Length: 199
Image (cartoon, rainbow, N blue to C red; front, top):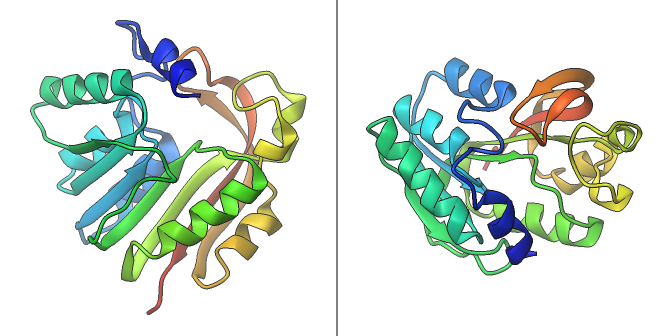
């Protein structure tokens, strides 16, 4: 899997673009209190860089060396800084607690997904936000991005069960137009979610 992503990112072009995901951007733009944010599997850094530009203290990770290199180049281009680590979801660990965690199109098989969500919740501060946009299972009907394995596409009820220790703040399933580089382009079925850790 790491070789797949290294190969995908091994190009001068930013394959998912340089602009942040619109839902992530909306969250960042409308959250008045800046703080620390963790972005797992952040790829080429478009979301991390945007958050850093808006005053957040950003920690990101990905298991692709190519992704990290491009993310740091993008941060330099915009004259900002990231803490960017090389790690898989399974191996990532930190003693730090974050004010927000954001997952943008991070897709894993169902068993690994549940484990990932439970693990990441432990890295949230009380009051911290869990933000997510991902392809729903309806996306299997579209060839506009995301896994072609339906077990790696998400069901809203399952996601909310994964996160049932958090307070649901915002939830929407929608058909939207995505324009995020070559691999996310056209009409797509997505899940958008914001939850909050109360204690």
